[in-house]
Amino acid sequence: ERLPELLRGMPKAELHMHIEGSLEPELIFALAQRNSVAIPYASVEELRRAYAFSNLQSFLDIYYAGASVLLKEQDFYDMAWAYLQRAAADNVIRTEMFFDPQTHTARGVAMETVVNGLHRACVDAQAQLGVSADLILCFLRHLSEEEAFETLEQALPFRDKFIGIGLDSSEVGHPPEKFARVFARCRELGFHLVAHAGEEGPPAYVWTALDLLKVERVDHGVQSTKDPALMRRLAQDRIPLTVCPLSNLKLCVFPDLAQHNLGALLDAGLVATVNSDDPAYFGGYMNENFLQTFAATGLTAQQAFQLADNSFVASFAPAAQKQVWR
Ligand code: ES4
Ligand code: ZN
Image (cartoon, rainbow, N blue to C red):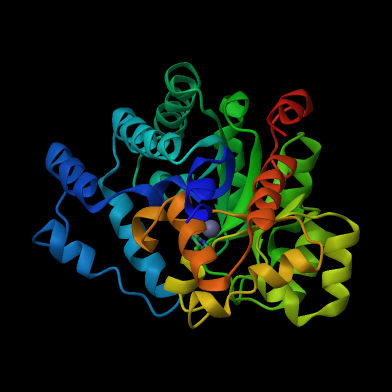
């Protein structure tokens, strides 16, 4: 079978992954020991057994608990470096990594500690792995607009170390419009803008992410197929969707991968991409997402090329660099 080799070997960009979601249980235990942080699991195996989720919130509770072992700049570096090596092994040559500073600053970790550790790993990735890596700061949507503005203020001294702003965490009940003013400010500041929308939430949240937040890409967006007018808008404006098949499977957005609508999104002419979201928690890095999705849905080699090309088209790398990759 040639298709798996094509999927593994093709150069690709990853545009939707949360660096805190790349913390493997082994690294959580090692950092807990190094930092003398108590965690409510007796072993790596017990922690991994807790990775059985019924929806987004059941995952987020464990994801925020796992991140509690991150205290020092070196911890953030080690986490990102482990992911970047793993990405390089999957022939990811460009990655745009989300980070959630509020998860750390709320525990007394300084913004500087978070950003400097992650950014140093990005610099080393280019030099040592040939992987182009940038950071996107995400606001937690279950927290307030005011807290998002405070986080932006804390991050601005380090504005050269991240390229964009995103919106993540619990979607339903926290619509994009809650963050319209802070996104308007981020837009004035020249950041790229993205938001999670239409993961569990309705198509209406995708519309407001586009029209009120003015995002350039939609993270997930898989609920958009429920709204034909929205599908036309996404196709006409060539708004990329950063789709995460194994995430959708593990969080029960689709009952099985064979039911996933990635093929329908591509058939409708949308700029859909494949991404790992939280690879340590959802059972696979980039190539595992490609391999399992193609095996389950019968997508073709031509669609594999389309997905790889879409990933570079949708990336926030400089235009000259994108041309080289395509
Ligand atoms: C996330 Cl899968 C997902 N959805 C929303 N927020 C997140 N943060 C980390 N993973
Ligand atoms: Zn995500």
